[in-house]
Length: 190
Image (cartoon, rainbow, N blue to C red; front, side, top):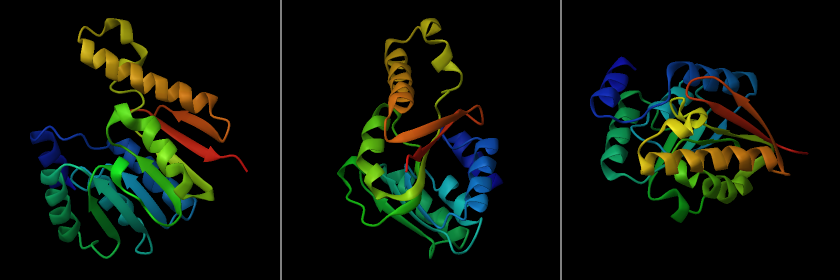
């Protein structure tokens, strides 16, 4: 994992923070998660970490960036989890995914979080959860007035809109956790 973490840092590729990954792995173990849909593969770091929890875990992960997709393929093979992870090269909003999942993990284009949630919630098993990363966005969601960049302020506003969307969602109950870069666990109401 050290090589992947170093590669991500050197190439400015965002990967999940360590305590976020540990939370995710622990959640998978405790809830006996075996089928996962990941929106945003990047270099395969979190998919590999999830797959290593248990050999019965199967993951479908979607990545739209060709370079990251190829790097993820290489990394998945290096960790010998290619039988567990199916990676799709495409924009998640253009992909139709079949089947139901215990867990849907959203960690892709922050501005599209609501669209991802709405599109893929139908792929969730009745007792499944949607986990979203980066809801603190390096602490910026709490300090939006301090942001000078107009583009960055707009992105942070969209993340805050997503948090508001989760709070007001009638179909899901969401717990917000101050772990990693801010995680939301959204459970479908039964």
